[in-house]
Length: 323
Image (tube, rainbow, N blue to C red; front, side):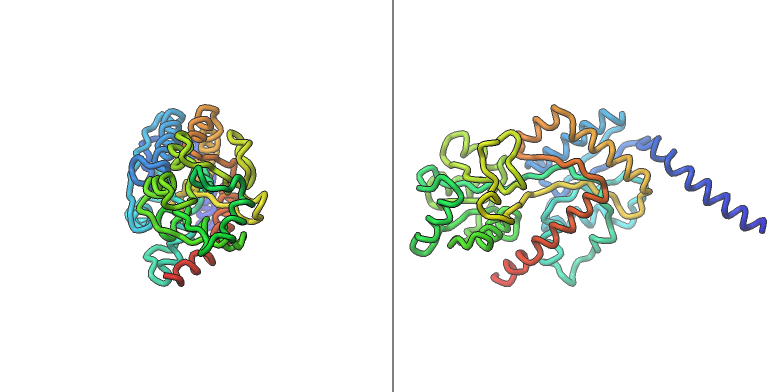
């Protein structure tokens, strides 16, 4: 009986300590591990959030870039066995790790994504846009589909990396719209953009930040954006799903924690992240990077990620089968 009361006392003390632990978190520097290459748009977004959280917490956030292998290098670094489950090492994942990697590495994944991490919150989405060369005779998504279907042999579309989000968006668009379009691989968004500006390829799918130089010099025109609805700073740019229902696609950035981090700390992280991404100067800077956040709880973030898996895994399987 005495041992039983001692055990109950220990459990009660542990439970009571968790919220207190969250109140004092963080009390030392925090590390963000990201698959983003230094200087690209997701990296800039990550560092902006890290800077704001540093100011909010009074503790430095160190961003470690671990690009390569479709995100697998960052996954392994963030789930290493020597990482403490205390919230001081966090993982800034990207869409492709969840939507592409499990299909490409099926049966060979060294890390179980579903059990290795827990979602903290949404950092931002980067919706993919449809753009055409300035001389393409189409001024809407409907006109583009009609043009592709009456063009001998169809139309080519440029996108970065086979299996990347821009490529997958093109495949989803083709499937939903029945447009006669075919993918052309490019070694980077800038290569696709130059090909479209030069007229070597008539159209492309890419994030707004990567399209910005071509839009600014009028070498290309954006016909639509694959966001759920029109973007607040671009109200005249139609959402693609106004014409082709179901074409909603974004590269997204989600903050995650290693499984085992106390829920109280996860909830504290979520609250502070939501505070940061709602700051007016962050919203303004995000928009220049083609990035838009959502006010999501950890549970809602997890639901969003599962819905993305359900949408994209069949598309990725089709792309892999066609190699």
